[in-house]
Image (cartoon, rainbow, N blue to C red; front, side):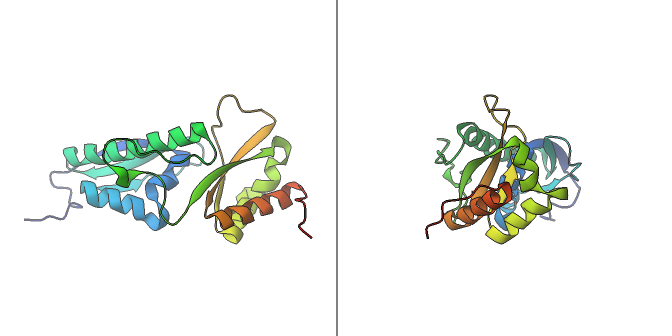
Length: 191
């Protein structure tokens, strides 16, 4: 009996739409979360090529139909949890979703936290840079993950842009400092 679920025999595939800001959560650090979902559900998951435009990415889940549905449920749980946190904004503590599946909470191990950081809209381009080179450089230098929120909450001031910074506390501090440098905020010097 071939237990190799990558074989197409008896398998199907479904697509799950994943909001862009949740893709990193579904994949996880070094791909840990997506591997966990694949192992837990017994499926293969691949994100389709990114067109860079649409607000969502399609995740293709391949395997037996019941397994695909199981994986889709896990992914949708992650999306829901991430959206709840996005709406609450800032340093919200991830609440367990009360289903006895605490291992799927979005909080990444190792003290990783998330904050939102607002920047004047006219300075947003300075943070991102040409072709995204500044924001890539901030990510590399700080070790944190900084990204612009594509769909900010409806009550957001139109003159502001919201960035999400994820990482360990000291990485986030470095990222904030680098953003301030780009924007031209002078943080008060401690000497």
